[in-house]
Image (cartoon, rainbow, N blue to C red; front, side):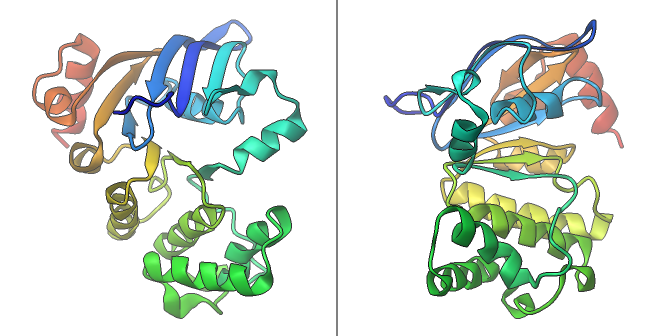
Length: 249
């Protein structure tokens, strides 16, 4: 998408758990502004791949370069500094239940980036408005719906002003009626130009928002392309089989 170096470059990534090869020699590039949606059946390696991008999962071999820096060569302390630029949103929300929504969002910018409380508060309030929850600043997480908690989790990740957002099945733990409100926030984020890598089972979202869809199967990216090509004319037999099942539901 640009002449700049890739935001993330994955070289010959392998991840084994014992004798089980979960990621099998993956080499891929993610450029600034890309919205990559990773789809595939459970057990295909999608979440392991995503968590390898910021080394939450340590690769068995291979490299992950982020903005030109080889993450696999860094100490844990150095890695933590780089991870500040990589926002991560999980299936579970991981909010601190004893802190208000506002305080959950302010915490990392103040502690990690030494932002003043005034600046962190102003930023947190702006982010709550962005995710449609400005009226929940003083609420505690336990009073929120799952969809609201996930939107707070997205705002919290954005508070660190990351260069990329990684989403690991962010709607899979939600009741169906709450999925749309979270996807809407993610769609708006994509339109704003945020680089995103998203593991999801939401095929309609993938078709609408991705600039590239990657189909993972058995530890490899078996097929990738523009959403219209993947969903309308998948070429790999496993992609065809997977989509015929999920799109028929």
